[in-house]
Each structure stands twice: as structure tokens, then as C-alpha cells.
Image (cartoon, helix red, strand yellow):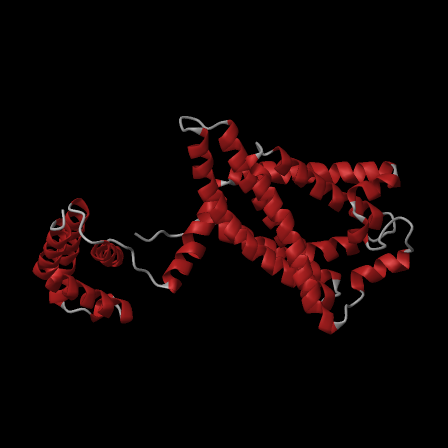
Length: 334
């Protein structure tokens, strides 16, 4: 009974002595590659790397099966994990990954959502029309669609001069950054809710899109009733072509997940939702960037640019840029 531990220790020492030279060489190769790059390795080291990795894996397997000391097993597990990423891992630079995301992954994800994008656009338009008709028939509906904190005095009780000033009145220059950050946060929350609520069969996402459209339609009706429809359109459009496009895409991503849960096809519901979620999440990563641009246009451009023509020109340009980026065909590299 007292000999077993000594025998185990002796076996572990012999096992280590027989293979430690190979482990040390593998560790030295990995250290060089991690400190510099794989290109810093010699041809001999590159050829030896996979052989030494397989040897370390074999040693780890033996160590586990024969219950050698835990310290040795832990060391081999770490060594094998490090070697795995150099033998089988894909090594690309941050710039290469960013180029792949912007050049392929993001636009591909958005294009794959084209059906859901059309549905989300339709829901937004239906909400805008409904909001405009209801508020036009009875202004009391205005407060049902536009929260008081967002209206900020812009309602049917306001004077026309005040409403006009809200479209052209410049904010204090040192407050523009804070205002832009607030708007970016608010718009991001709306888009994230559109996406996140998709898991509930897409119903809350659809309702949020309709409500967003109704809010826009209600405000348009207010300003149109004072002869400021064209001016309000420019005020909204300078950032709206980016912001609303982003919210539509977020809604489309949420609808894709909800659709996958309701109609999973041949896959289990969880697997179908996971598959849809990967593509939708890629699109959402791009949506956040769009909202950042919209926040800058809303917080800075809209406050500094007071010409209606310039506002509409910027709005049209941004819409063409986003549409071209997503939907124009592009050359594929192998």
C-alpha cells in the first residue's frame, strides 16, 4: 500500500524524461510564433510543428489514461491548446477580418433578409399612414403616439413660430456632442428591441415597427397642419434615411428569428433559431454602425445645416450609399 505512490511518482518521472525534450522544443516554437509570427519560424520548425503537436496529444492521452500527476496533465493540456491554434487555426489580421466583414459578411447578411426587410418596411409605412390619418381626424391621438418627453412641447397647442424654430434653431455648440450621444443611445435601444423581441414569434417586433411609423406619421401631420411639411421632411430625412433604414433592418433581423421559430422546417426549433440568429446578428452588428452614423447626422448635421435643399441632398446621398453598399452586385474573390 505504501509503495504505490512512489511507483506512480517514478512512472511519471520516467514518462516526463522520455518526452520532455519534444515538449520543450514545441514550447520554444510556439513562444517564437506567439512573440513574433509564424513567418519567423524556420522551415525545419514549420515541418516539426504538426509532428510535435501530435506527439504532445499522444502524451496527454497516455497521461490521462494512466492517471499521472495532475500538474503534468495540466501542462500538456495548455501546451496542446496553444499548438492547436497554430496548426489548425485561421490566422488573419484585424484589418483582414474587418475587410471581410465590411466587404462580404455584413452586406450578405442584409441581402439574405430581403423578404423580411420588405415586410418591415411595409409595417413601418402602414404605421405612418395610420398615425397620420388618426391624428388628422382627431388631434387627441397625437399624444397616444408621441411621448411627452419626445414631443418636448411640439404638439397641437404650440405656436407655428415655435415649431419652425425647432426645425432650424441651432443648439449650443458645446452641447451637440451630448445631444448626439443621447440620440444614438435612444435609436440604438429602438433597433435592439426590434431585434431582441423577435424571439416572441416576431409579434412584438411587428408592433414596435408599426408604432415607430405611427409616431413619425403623427409628427408629420402636426407640422403639415402648420404648412411645415417640406421643412419637417428635410429635418427628419437628413438622418432618417440612415436611422429608419437601420431600424427596418433590425426589425427584419427580429422577424427572421421569429419566422424560424414558428416555421423551423426540417430543423429542430432551437437549431433553426440558432441558424437564423447567426445571420441576423451579423446584420445587427452593421446596424449599430448605421445608427452611429445616424446619431452624428442627427446630433451635428441637422443642427448645423439649416438649408432644406442641402438636408434633402444629404438624405438622398446617404440612402443611395446604403442601398448601393447592400444590394449592388460585387466581384467575389476566391
